[in-house]
Amino acid sequence: MNAPVRRLSLVVAVLFASLLVSTTLIQYVFAADLNARPDNRRTLLSTFARERGEILVGQTAVAKSVPVDDEYKYQRVYDEGKLYAHVTGSYSFFGASGGLEQAENSLLSGSSDKLFYRRVSDLFTGRRAQGANVETTLDPLVQAAAADGLKGIKGAAVALDHTSVEAGRNGSRPRSEARSPSSVANSGVW
Image 1 (tube, rainbow, N blue to C red):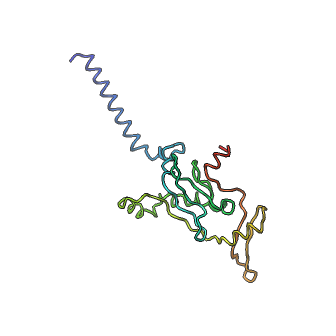
Image 2: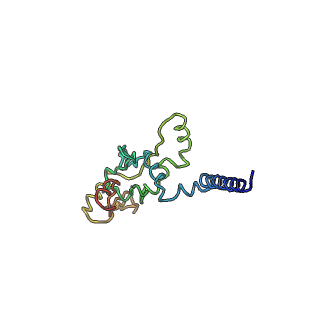
Image 3: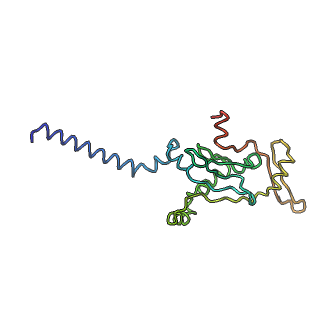
């Protein structure tokens, strides 16, 4: 074998080895960092391919995921948006913002360590993975009475027991309304 061919084969071998090292680093060493990046569209789309758990007030779901026929698979719907927005927060393509959507994101999305046995069971039974429901201690009647009593005024109402001065129930009127991503997108806010 002559010298130029030997040098060329050595260069090709070095390039091939550097490609293997680069691929290994990307897939195993930097994988967690790449998945955690906020601009990673693949990770964002995978969160919308899973049904999030419901946020319950009493037995009523005030936030739930409904199936849609587009790339997102599920869309978050807030049936009582104005009444419970300060508690539920909102969840959009850009992540959970405030309230229970953010505070309990790992449970609602189904990625919490508390759901480990459920995820293993889903894996073996073939069930589709979904998030867990979050139950609140809100009383829907008190919240509705507080909203009705405030009649458009931003503020809060607290029911106190006058004999012991203990707070029994409370309710408030939120500043904003939880909206689904499509309603925001269609309104031109983006």
